[in-house]
Image 1 (cartoon, one colour):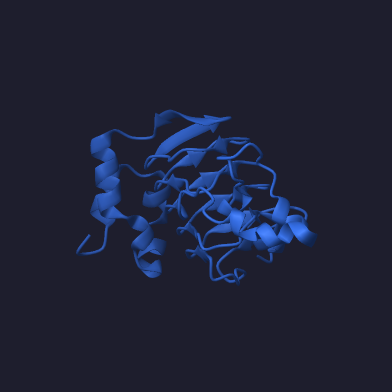
Image 2 (cartoon, rainbow, N blue to C red; image 1 turned 30 degrees about the vertical axis):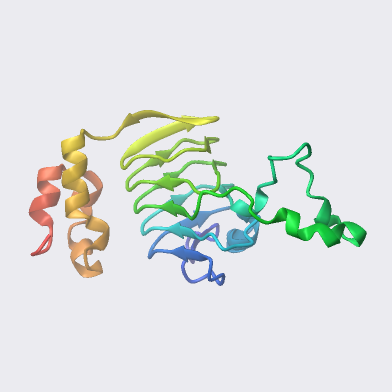
Length: 202
């Protein structure tokens, strides 16, 4: 972004077929935000995907640890001998069947604080906030605020009924032109205002 050299929109930068990023999601880093795919998505050997929704804000140093970081835990040693090569490489089949939790999925409008870490297979709901320095090891509910190591639910931003209303209105799916006309409502209005501003059919 010309006025913000430390901020990049992620969707145009991603080249891996294992990473999907929605429109307008961005990463902020004073060193090299364009290196997000290699510096911030770690041990990504597949087949699990990283899916990030629309309008997500990722602070400096956010890391996604993918399933390739896992080691066997069902034997006496967790050391991955075959990757060291030589005669040990003959036992590469011993690395198959590593434990995994599937894709890592981030909803829309999620705010990640500075240096948060997301572990493999976690699902983070729409509108969630991840506090700076958190290590997210479990799923985060829609509009949940989590923090700590391991991250724990601090509270939800809205009541269950209001969360259902917000999910139904799904402002992140509004056409860009319509969204532009109602930005103040999306940023600072109440749920009643948001519902009133929704395009027909929402």
